[in-house]
Image (cartoon, rainbow, N blue to C red; front, side, top):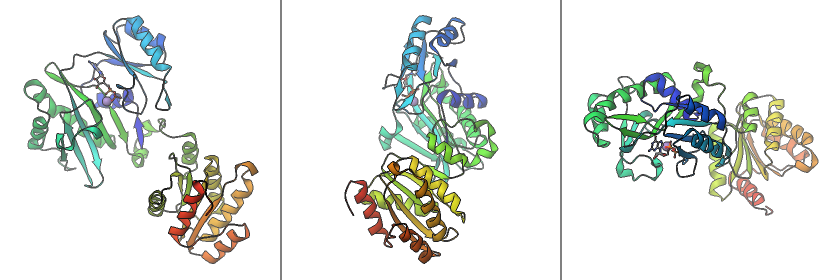
Length: 378
Ligand code: GDP
Ligand code: MN
């Protein structure tokens, strides 16, 4: 998942003809001021923190300026912020428009429907999660023909548009739909989509590009701002590794078993932190590498849940024991293991020799991990 900062998302929009305010990104207060003085950004203007988290408007990360000096001050203040844990390194300066109405519009991939869906609401400018479901209209989009004329009219109606803005919507939808396909997007969100005079303008942009289509888009390869440093290393080593905010490290193999393991821990009251999917490997070195990466995330306890298939139990056990030798004394953590399947007896024996007991029942082993994570003894 490649999440683009607003200004990058807007560059994508611009390429397809989605109407936008005039603006420019800046990386210092001085640069912000000179963009305004040069007329690149008209006054009055909006100065917006370029972070991936939402809710900037309410959080003081969107400010207004009437003079070049004010633009400089606003940019300086925002660039000094840490917004929801993310340091602000860039601000977007844009002309401030007189907004008639704030609407919501997005095209998203609906995994349950297995279709892209057009989502619209007349209640824009607030997070869509907080909008009453009755105020949201979802129109599944047939992937080949795209939106039919009557479906577009349904969107116009749902948004309560008439006159100029109503006439402007179909070409905006066509531009977004094209962008969604050509850019291999998972989500294109405009919130708010503003009625400005007789037209529509995208005031905000949230763009997420599908990772698996990365090979078709080398232009996005540089953008990795949403990964943690450890996730970055994991990616380079081709290890599937995700950091959540819990304290139980999870190592499993295969996406299905990994997700099910997270669910079980959660259900037992535990908080899964880092999880790592070993996938299919017969190389103990790869397991060691993955395990050392896990150690760097400093989990309170690690729950190893392996079903041996292509990845045999003894391969995992060997890799794990080797990794434990390499983890420095002060950074060790308890391990709860459950290894079943191919070469289970060999794997269990290797673990036992290293002082780790494999608990065969999922519920028992998961419960042990949760208990340890909460400071108890299993
Ligand atoms: P978010 O809160 O992180 O989603 O940031 P947005 O880009 O959506 O901006 C938050 C709010 O700032 C919007 O809902 C608008 O109310 C306001 N805003 C942004 N740009 C403009 C503008 O050009 N003119 C006016 N009047 N308000 C703006
Ligand atoms: Mn927004």
